[in-house]
Length: 199
Length: 245
Image 1 (cartoon, rainbow over the protein chains, first blue to last red):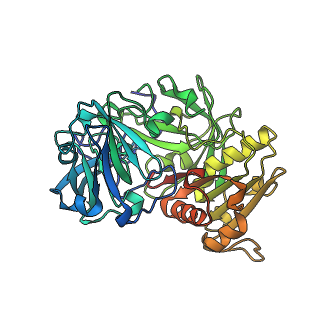
Image 2 (cartoon, each protein chain N blue to C red):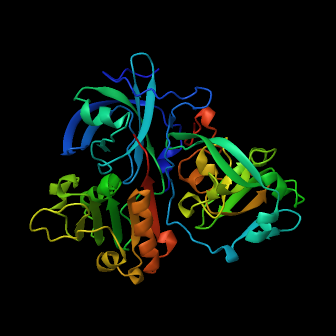
Image 3 (cartoon, helix red, strand yellow):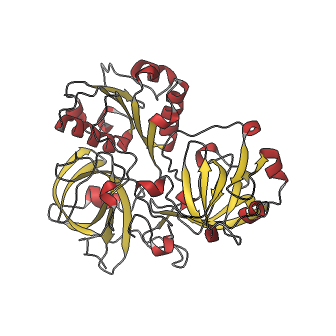
């Protein structure tokens, strides 16, 4: 426990303790964290690619819509301290996408419009833990929230759920992505409060 | 450069309030002293942690307002339904202590290097990290041509108003007041739009570096407008805030 802040009582929102990680607070809003302008790629130019496997694979927007879709309800946790419970997403499981590729990679680098990247161990995006999501709360995903599609990796801090995602690069070794090169933790587990370098 | 000060683990430090400035009715600057604080770059922020007597804790992030090398100061806007900001704005007196951790962020920073002009675009309390850059510019005697475009709701809501009335050489300040304007107001009086950006922003050919900070809606409007003027997306660095109570 830290030093007492004289007279501070706090608002004590009633969050279920097993669903709100340390240092987080609940919000009903959906704040946005982005390092640059919001990209606007027309759907007819949009593709999702997986590189670094036996051969590169790619889906157009229409082809992605034909893949089996899943609807998931997840709690999300942003490194800037807000958490939001029971968010509803629809998209394609990363397992489904990776089934199209032969590989023995241990890591992926997600790459996005706008030049942003984020790194993830393969085990954090497989076995039903990650999706390429294209609806939020039943509506097409807004550009400010990463539309037309974003990665959804809800068990890690939300910067790992890369907005405007355009593909995954399979890799043998882990390397820091954009935020990870700018002071943020390599993996970002909210339950271990892995916010920054050295956490 | 990026995050070079962050190589080790950022530990929680005890900070003591040693000064305060009421900037506007809802915004206050706190000057802090913290043993072990390693310094910061202009544009970075700091995590604040408050602890109640029974051990309950709340954490939020706040932008640093002071220039590198000056005493550490944060500027906090009180949010109506906030948890930490009402305490920092309304309760803290000199000598009070709480915990801080930082500095945080290695991308939305300006170190004063380079010849390119700098365009700063602020919405409301988004001016805070940009003020750190403006103060840093003055402190190092930089001659980098710099423009601040600063949108506030009203004259009374303008943070750092008197300091911005007397800008250093080469710094131009443009205000826009979106909700109400005092009699005789000669600045802009509307939300930032393409025409306003066209009058204030450097031409894209000058290859300015851009820092925009404000609400999501504000940042998107400003960034989209600059992209439409031909600014490369990667020349525009943004910081957006939503609910940070």
